[in-house]
Picture 1 (cartoon, one colour):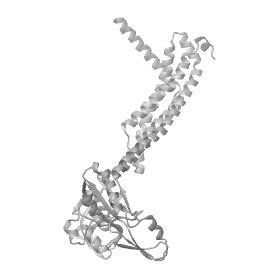
Picture 2 (cartoon, rainbow, N blue to C red):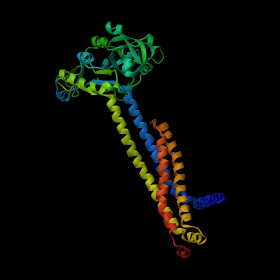
Picture 3 (cartoon, rainbow, N blue to C red):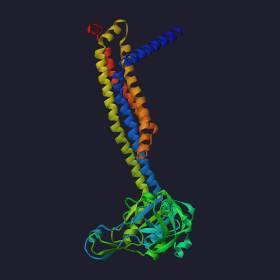
Picture 4 (cartoon, rainbow, N blue to C red):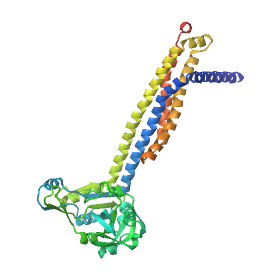
Length: 439
């Protein structure tokens, strides 16, 4: 028992001595060791930073899709391509296309598993108050809008059934629009003017997914997407009509578009109904639409596609960053092979004094592992810092995951072992006599 203890103690002391000698050899050439570690440092940093950027971009994309609702099916009116081409002439005409009120009623009564059907009319108009004028989206909708589209009532109230039934001239506006129209006043005591009609403000709304509420009736590019005014659907129909008139791009003639509904959002009772209902809704709409004047968007399918894209994106980014680690490993091997040649006489002396091949192998392997692990630790520290700087300076979201740090560190350690074995075995195989003769 005592003999086994003394043997293990002797082995541990020998290993400790070899490790200390390897670290001492690296410290004798600090600059060379530091430059050798740079490849590993940049490789580990690249893996963490690139995966953090990819994870952040994927998270934002998935969150925007989730806000649309995994139980929702969104149907939007779409101008048929053939009618877009016909509109290039210098004449006046009327286009009739898009979703109808009957479409919404049919979906509600025909498709199994439907919980709610939310019809919407989305028009672009200028909203005025006093000397302020702001281009906005006028959204004609029903009281269930906040529950389906994702909106919070911050102050006051939203539209109610009585408002819609009696075509009341009332509205709810987004918080962003309230700040622009009423910088110094309480909006709930005021009225805004749209197309010569005054609408009393009864509530302030905060959109959770305003980025997805792009204009259906005009270009809102470059303007805030939370400039929304919500009015009862029947009020929108009676006050603004269904005919939208605008001048042709050629400057000659007018174009009129008649669209009853710009969007219908169908909320299913459960996600298991969504994909079945999608095909049923398409079949139902195809029966009553001769033209390709609508599109169906299923957020659940987009979410699954985004998750698949995320996996591919992470694999690509990780592979690109791993190449940096590979290059760093080649750099370590190159330096260690040069070190073997440089220290041939030292190896001969150690062998002559009783060092075994295993001791020489261990010493050189320790040096490569210290270089790779040390570079990996520094690379992790830099890699964790850079995403925070990117988020702070560019407002781009980055997410550092534990598995990306573990992967980068694991690869750096594996690189040290893989690229250190050959130089270490080369050093151990040197003939002691020939090594002592080396100048």
